[in-house]
Length: 374
Image (cartoon, rainbow, N blue to C red; front, side, top):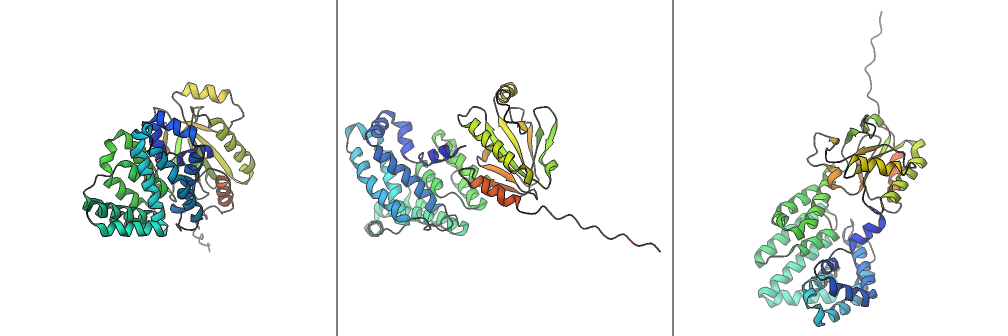
């Protein structure tokens, strides 16, 4: 929800798997190597910025490669220690992902290593083909056509290798370069469907489903309807011609109050220019929600309760999924009723709101002239 949580999510790629499955070893690694954690954070943030952009090399790749070069010996040193034996599969996959980063960025030593492995033949060449295809996926950026070609290459190389790749492999690729279109996301969901029965793979599948749904809904008309806490009916259609900020928020989250306060500030600052804010609250019970809001009267923008009764509905003929269930980004409906999924961190949200407020509302429908009587 907050920028801190967004940054934290970047850390949950492969190092987090060690945290889940090898807590004692990970704790020792975390305490002894603060440099390691700083480097991992730098790599995760830089990697996502580079590979998920329209131009996969517009960010500074040199810093990413330098961080990988620094962290690699730290990881290898830990893998040599007896107490880290249980974590070796996860640390090894972490190094494999960094190798794919280097390959996608055409780092000379990585390219030479891959070419040598391809020439070796057998299982070594099969894995080299997978690494090359994975690097091509990263190199595709958010270009849907390039992504689809890279995904086809990946499927073919995986099939030819007769290997079963773990969900960590796919999850890392998707985190650093999510699908650039609904078509790409849907193809990947269908291909990765077997993973949906694996509890450990559910976060990866949720992430893919969320990104695919965002592609489906972004840029299309959408209306949110429901009942306000007073019981009165509500619809964003009543705010036609305004910019509507939809703040989906959970009651039991440590950053909730700070985020609600920020939404309140945005409303106060821009309401005179045409901004309205509607909160969609996820809470265990309506009474708990009312108690929370009563203790914070400064949060006075209207709220819909989205609880077990699902008193909040989405009005749209084309929608096949409820975006309030899967889209974690803030949603903004422009003056023409078109939905925009917005990254709410930093200044991005306010910048998007200011841009949409500057746009005109939909043109009124021209009426035919009345005939002039004689």
